[in-house]
Image 1 (cartoon, helix red, strand yellow):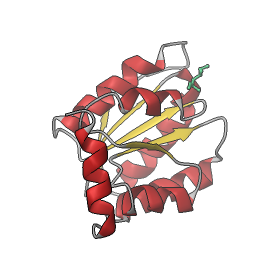
Image 2 (image 1 turned 90 degrees about the vertical axis):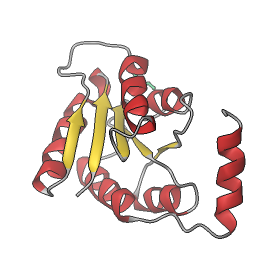
Image 3 (image 1 turned 180 degrees about the vertical axis):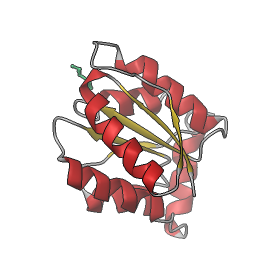
Length: 146
Ligand code: RB5
């Protein structure tokens, strides 16, 4: 069981809702930080909340959904301690964890189908950082915002 902070804008609301249902059914604890409807909002407000929740240790992982998965990712990566990755499929999901130790997964509702999104999220949550040659690279990345 993992604690996952979830957030989206209006462009990601439907997919976030579906993924939260799926995560909850799988026994995970989800902190839903909004948005809560299809009404137009600004993605940085929700991406920042999710990123801060992961950075301060309230959640182990973050899930962000917007139309493309890009704006939320750019925003989340402004927060020290966050390594957010836009993921399009199972391969990018496991590589983001294994090579980059990503702690926030970003998905684009307008670009990815629900089944691929569910599968990619599951793979992201179960893949482990491989350490080894990747450790020094991730440390270099982290140092930029220290
Ligand atoms: C909202 O229309 C859209 O710009 C947003 O969801 C996202 O795709 C931004 O990166």
